[in-house]
Every structure is written in C-alpha cells, then in structure tokens.
Length: 419
Ligand code: EPU
Image (cartoon, rainbow, N blue to C red; front, side, top):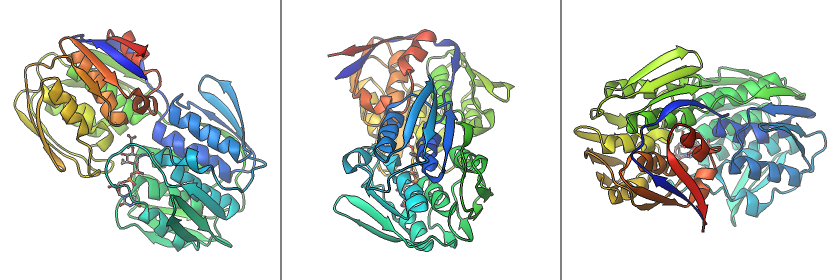
C-alpha cells in the first residue's frame, strides 16, 4: 500500500500545466465504439481510470496503440459484440458509458453494476429511462445491467433530474439511432460539450450541447479522426484552491478560464485574487487569511461538487464561520472527519457542514475516502504544520496524473512511499 508523506507549511508558488479532463476522457473512450475506423485521442490523462477503460475496450476487440505520453490510437473497425467483463466494469463508475455506446454499435450491452467512489446512493434510473425511450429493454439485477434492442429510434427524453452521466449516455445511444432525439433538462458540464464535440468531429449531428436542450439527428455511421480532450476543469480548480490554502501564488496553464468562473468568483469573495492572463492561463494568489464564504454545490454553471472538498480545506482555516451545502451527493463530507484529525473544527450533518475557521492545521495520519477527498487532504497536508501521512492513494490515482510531481514542482515536500 502506497502512502504520501508530506512535510507541511509550504507556500506553493510557480507554474503548473493541467492535463486532459478525466470525466470527458472516460466518456470519449467508450464513445469510440460508435466509430467504424481509427480515432487518435490526444491530451488523454494518464490515470488509472483510463488504463482500466483501455483494458476493457481491448477485451471487446478494440486495438489500442500508445503513440505518445498522452496520445493513443483507437481502432474500432472490428469489435466483438460480447459482454463487457463484469469484474472490470464494476470497478468504476464511468463503465456505464459502455451501455450507451454498445447499444448504439451492437444493439446489446451487458455491463457490471458500476462501482466508483462512495458518495452515497448512485442510482442509474435516468440512464435506463433514456435507453428505454429510444426503444431498448433494460434489466438491472444480479450485479449487472443488460440493455438490448432490435433498433434504436429517436425520441424525446425529459430527465427528472440533471445528470451528467445520463445526459452523455443518452447522447451516445442517440447518435446512430434512426431519427431525431431531443434531450430536455440536460446537464451542461464542460465535459458534455467535449463528448459532443468528439462525436461531431467523427460525423455525428448534435446541436445544443452545453444548454439544457440537446438535439441529436441520427446518422448512419461515424468515421475516424483526431480529437484532443478538453483541459480538466477540476484539476485546474484543485491547484487554484491549493494556492489559496497555502497563501501561495500559482499560474495555471492549459485551462479554460471560463469553466472556472464559479470558483474564481468564490476565491475573490474570500479576498484572494484571480487574474486571467489569457483564455487558457490563470494566476491565483493569496496574501492574507481568506474570509468566510458560503458554498452550495450545483450542476454547472453552479459551484462544482468535485471541488467541494478542496474548498473545505480552505474554509477550515478561513477567518470566521463558513457553511457548505452539498446538493449533488448524499455523502461527500467524509473528508471533514480527516480534517478534524488535523485540528479543523468542522461539524458535518447530512448535506450541510459548518466550518469554524482555525488559525492553522497540523499534520496527522489521514485516509482518502474518495478521489477529491484525497486531493483535499494533499492540499491540507501541504498547508499544515508538521507531517501528514495520507493512505488509500488508489482513489487519488484514479483521477490525477502525477499529482505529487506537480505539487513538488510548486514547492511542496511530498513523497510517495510503498510500505
Ligand atoms: N442520479 C439519479 N439517477 C440517475 C443518475 C444520477 O438519481 O440515473 C443522481 C445522483 O445520485 C446524483 C445526481 O443525480 O445525486 C447527479 O449525478 P450525475 O449523474 O450527474 O453524476 P455522475 O454522472 O454519476 C459525474 C462525475 C462525478 C461528478 C458528478 C456531478 C463522471 C465519471 N463522474 O458523475 O465526478 O461528481 O458527475 O458533477 O463524470 C469525480 O470526478 O470525482 C466525480 C465523482
């Protein structure tokens, strides 16, 4: 079991370059199954979720060739319409995109019940609703999801709730369906636009991605091509909050500054500074103790739930009492118990957490409970006085490429040890 050992109280300064977005990449990879040809995917993050996805695609007969550190070639010309391996697909959440993609390509999909970070109940009823609207039969049970159809026919889909995964899955299933599909109450996250842009590049007819109504006109076939994954909004936000938490000064390169507006607004409300250097570079710095703010997580363009725990670290040492309301996930405050071991004073009850800002955190042994909680604990360890030991790095490895190297380059004293 690997651990991070962090010798804290370091002010982070310098430049960091952001990788491609995990949550776009884990949808674009299965989307290649809809293509009859060869796709080159650039700016692919080198993280464990992507490695597992490539392994799953290989079991379906997809040929994958690494042609650069962050570039692969995916040949989906000949695939086998067989069940996806249950043990592999149930390891992570984004395996549910195989259902939309395989339904589109093979008219049949069998996938293990998706696993992933423990954030509370993670139903997939809206995904099933979309597949059924397009003419598929969906059965969920015995640890797997099975969807079959003779043919997919475009239809209206009105989602009861805003869901990133269900919106992308509906797009995947509709791209090769006969006729027109209209998705209403769609999610608007940047990675939805990115998946749509990938499919459009390969010949799909999709309008409105990034708004709450998406119209897809089915096409007969998608062709191969090249695509570069959008920069990771959440990785960029993680480094922005690391600058504030350590009272540092970080220039964040290769990000889309517009995607970070909900976070930039909050950082400025706390009294720290964000300067847009150009459309893809931001400088974030903090000279004094940030002031309290209240946060409510919401679907894009609201404050992202995936930056909630990193923001929690900042609020743990902000001046005054702050409140975070988590409105997306049932259980995303597990990290607060770990921060309390480091001297924070956080009272989390259900979907609300109250942060009584303390002067400083001190190092302690802590455990990551999910991907973003892990990132938050790294930031806390770098800011805290003393030594912090973080276990369960497997969560962090799922979504951040070389996170320790990147923090070291900014002045953190962090090392990875294998016990
Ligand atoms: N929901 C349902 N029914 C459904 C689908 C979702 O009730 O059929 C509920 C969920 O339980 C949740 C809410 O709707 O309360 C939103 O869930 P959503 O479907 O939007 O989440 P997701 O697609 O499973 C993606 C990201 C998450 C991110 C959320 C919200 C991927 C692979 N995962 O999950 O990312 O928190 O959107 O933005 O894209 C992370 O990266 O750390 C992470 C957890």
